[in-house]
Image (cartoon, rainbow, N blue to C red; front, top):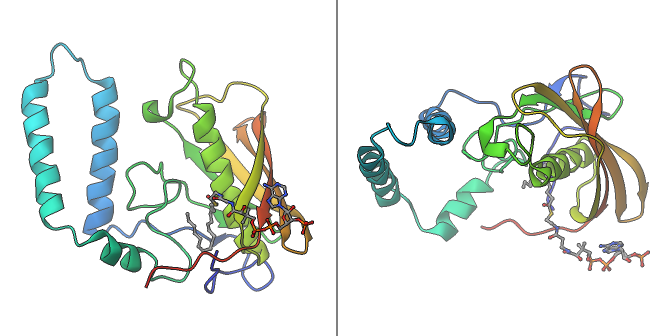
Length: 216
Ligand SMILES: CCCCC/C=C\C/C=C\C/C=C\C/C=C\CCCC(=O)SCCNC(=O)CCNC(=O)[C@H](O)C(C)(C)COP(=O)(O)OP(=O)(O)OC[C@H]1O[C@@H](n2cnc3c(N)ncnc32)[C@H](O)[C@@H]1OP(=O)(O)O
């Protein structure tokens, strides 16, 4: 994976924000509105909300957006034209309505961390976070931790241990760090904790340094 000029803990200040800022751009605001729609659909009274009208209006919005969508190949070039901080990924991307989005900071000790409160769309067991969502968040956090360390790679293995159910609707702190590097192999680890420090999920990941060329 190409690293671009991503900051590392050796040359950047403790507290450096490593994910794309929500700039308040129209696309960020539209994506926030889409997240709100997803959450509202999950919470609405299905017998009382006028869902036929809702469907028509949402279809109308989708048609308008599709009319203004360039070809996928062109869009991919645009998506990857930055310096290695993505705006579209499903964990931190302000332009991706699937992303919570998680904001990550780099620490002087090589750790990256961020706090997020997950809502209904991320539910697995009743009132708790889906295990696949936890793995997704941690995989990405380890990827960013690798970059903060100064390396980059593809996930080859992600070993996930679920210690206790991870609550929705409460702030969760997600952190990751590089544990060791052995040639092309990057070993990283991380966890998700509740505000009182209880570990809900921990992971160990093996990443292999490999470049996937950016579309151009
Ligand atoms: C989404 C945003 C990304 C943004 C990136 C942009 C810039 C970066 C900047 C900031 C970073 C920010 C964010 C990054 C965030 C997230 C990252 C997301 C990560 C992913 O979402 S990524 C998708 C899922 N991931 C895959 O899609 C991988 C598919 N797979 C392959 O592409 C190959 O399989 C590969 C590359 C893994 C290896 O292939 P290869 O040919 O390069 O290497 P090779 O096989 O020669 O192995 C060399 C040595 O590694 C050992 N080894 C290999 N694989 C192993 C395994 N699984 N277990 C144990 N050991 C293994 C061998 O045993 C050998 O060991 P030895 O040298 O000792 O013999």
